[in-house]
Length: 234
Image 1 (cartoon, rainbow, N blue to C red):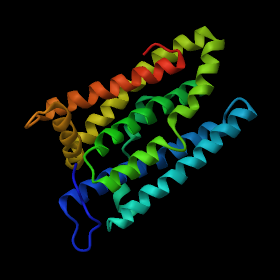
Image 2 (image 1 turned 45 degrees about the vertical axis):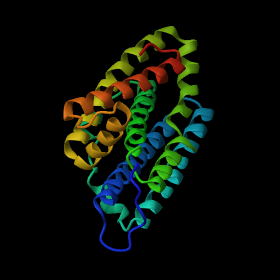
Image 3 (image 1 turned 60 degrees about the horizontal axis):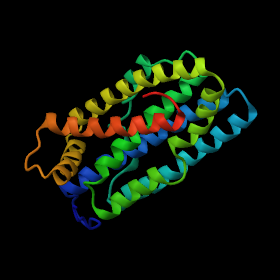
Image 4 (image 1 turned 30 degrees about the vertical axis):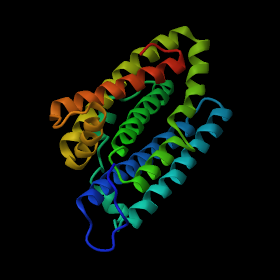
């Protein structure tokens, strides 16, 4: 793993790569907050509105530790997130849900893929930054917390379950497309996942194609497990 001390002067390349990933994590949490807050406002029951509202608030809480690490590394939180502004616009345009349930599953799948990608890339960070990312994405609010809401409805309504399974396949395909865009537009993130791929595959110089294939295979496997927890076919 890369060993990076907190900078006292100009930022190093490794620090810049860390700031790039921290910026992505912080931005996705902000975007997920907005989505989940909207879902909460239109939830069918009061219990669901309360549960989803709590999850939305926790997303901002977990973002704070990420932004604090950005500051420790000498970065500016807004600047780190700015390069990702609009990242999900095309994804959202192409995946407009027709029902509230489709919107909930879209968030569950989309946030899950984003979290899994960031966790993969975090393996190439310095120890402190990696701990912050992993802690943020595996503690507190998780995309999995909406699983109970979806699974309960899918169990009660087989027709809904079948529709959501099809919708989930579409969403994960679009989400993987966003990951491909991120890797192409942000060399720092490509370097981080290539580093992890090289360590795990013992490959000296992974190509762009092999790195993407490695990332996509792991994200797809995690998606399958995520859908299994809902009782839906991936």
